[in-house]
Image 1: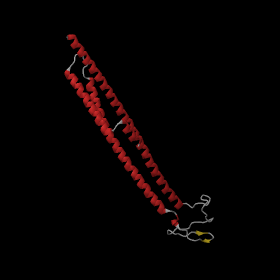
Image 2: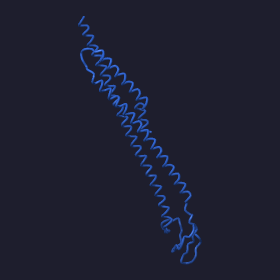
Image 3: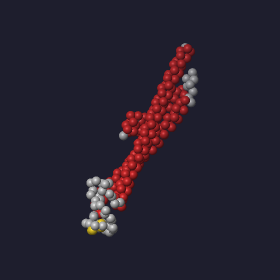
Image 4: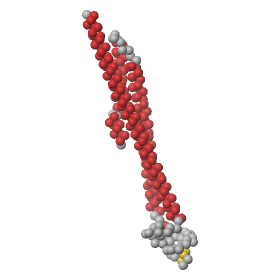
Length: 216
């Protein structure tokens, strides 16, 4: 009779060891899942860096267009620089005056040259469009940063909870003698770990969801 009871206790101990092993595997899977989340967060940071680089490139391009327009206003361009534009040789600029300032050459008076020949209006419209585009990119970047920060905080919280449960499970004694209190404690910790993992997947999504979000 005592031998049968001892065998039964041994079976219960083996079953508990098996459950503990399964729980350890589940916690390891959770750790791997969190590692993937960290990788995806790093990828999102890289995307934000590229987006910021695009914004800076757009700003530099707009600045370059403005500089070019100012130089065209100030310089007396030679005809060889622009083959499609025919200019009279040896023309000296005396005065600009108003927007339609007159040009005087050594050989006599020439017809007025309109200073408004440059497409200022189109350029200003393009500048406004570029400014609006940069503002939209900046808003999108701010939203992505806020979402990334929120996800990082949630991930850290879930990770801390799972780590705490792991330590508590590891601290449980593994003895040959069956203990009802220890068994109940272990089962409660297992239940809490499953609940936390379910809540984490509901809030942050599965690994596939996170990968799709990172690709977008």
